Length: 119
Image (cartoon, rainbow, N blue to C red; front, side):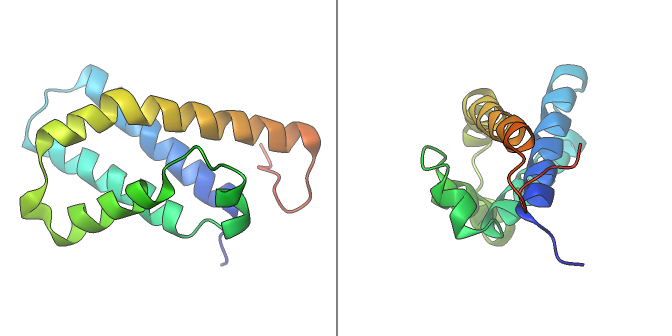
């Protein structure tokens, strides 16, 4: 099954929702950290597969940094600084969520073929 930009955006928003929910309700233990890192990897992987058209339409989102973080977390896991992860959760995820949620609402309202979220 080919995933669309809409699918990828939905995956990113779901991952952000999971991280935010866990951050508010869980102890920040080893299991929490492992889950958060996995969700951040999902965000990076989904971002890496978004079309250039979609990424170009959202130039304020630091796509290279998001994708780069995923690569570092997956392949250089021992170098992952938890303070950087906490900063990402507090500062970057809300901004990314808002940008993508606004974009998703615009897509639905405009009815742009091939970009409808179907929700």
